[in-house]
Image: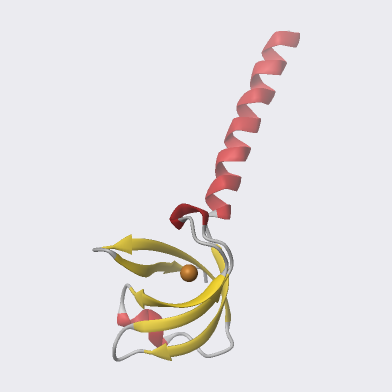
Length: 95
Ligand SMILES: [Cu+2]
């Protein structure tokens, strides 16, 4: 009985920590500048562990142009970034 509870608890912990890791994949940033025509956005971002990048201000490509159209300078966002064809790209913005 005690062992069963222990296993169940460990399983819960495993589920909890994997979803926490997913949540952490979102990077906090602030939009500085948008160039919707070129599909580029300048973001003041926090550290990006999956890209091994420290906090900085830089230009990202946007996956889709509608994404850039929804952004405004000064907007605080949480986003996902990946290297797409060698270019750093915002792939998702948390709504
Ligand atoms: Cu950067």
